[in-house]
Image 1: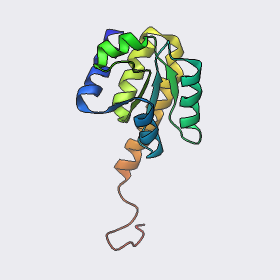
Image 2: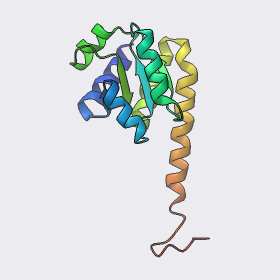
Image 3: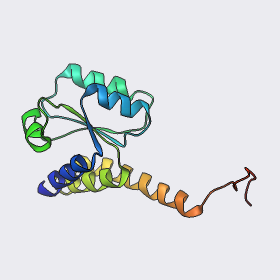
Image 4: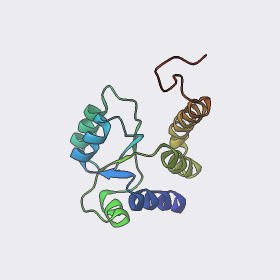
Length: 137
């Protein structure tokens, strides 16, 4: 669990985690959210709002084992019950670290790992069009 905390701290310092309902909604709407996280003691209303924000988007929604107070201490923001990670590789590392300790994170870690592999394959394949818009063969 310490490893996962470290990844969360790295994401915070690098600006790759968004906190709060409005900020998360903006990130999800822009298509940049890779992993949506809820505090363990988030209210049922907050969970419904999170599901509503994610409707029509592919980001997985997962509940963290930490309370709002614990998240506030880790991240330096009070009353934080919703988080979004915006970097795929960091989200994969975080989910994998959580999966080592909590088995319910296995599926999320696998899903994110597959998405990272697909993104790497697309990047390695190069552009499909040249600078003039002509399709490469």
